[in-house]
Image (tube, rainbow, N blue to C red; front, top):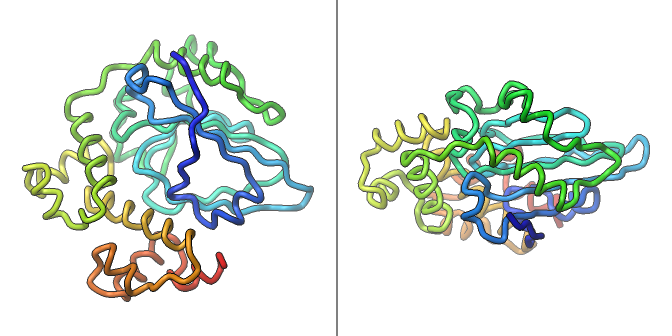
Length: 271
């Protein structure tokens, strides 16, 4: 499998201009995605901050699990994050992450994804000791290069299970939500999938751990973040309408619930 450097897609990364002054982010992926069906992409975050400087990094993660190799905190399988993910960056270190497609954690574990939400499992409890021993060590002083990333993927691919049809269906539906800028409501997803609301809820709960309504809202918040990061003269009422909210107040409440700040406050912070 051939791994290559990919262009950065930063949806979900909050306070981007300030963040990218403190951290570096690289993304990698296979030249042929069909080679590794359980992988979305690989991300690498590094930093080198002066003593005493702490950067509170905040993210609204994509709705999927990650296998994370953290030089300071160890390696683990992280479930979906239902809330904002916060990480205090300090000193010198690196974190390597493998973002799995939605529902693809089933390639490695039969743990109920609802139990994984906002939680993690040490990698030693996910893979056999023989598999863990074969994985390259990630240190704070050395950035994992493409050969190292390729070796990690080779080791994990050897033990990955095929994804079920149901898991693949969840992936397709989430892709539909992500790529459809006007899919804002459960009724829209019901029509697109030919499934009832109850069937969708059961499918997503069983294979993702979160509800389809939550997924729709998360992508709307990603779109909102993109708009607020890209411009200083954002008409918030117009943005709320474009994202399908009934009014600006409803949009502001949802945005604040997910990010911790109202849209106007967030926009002023990023000017």
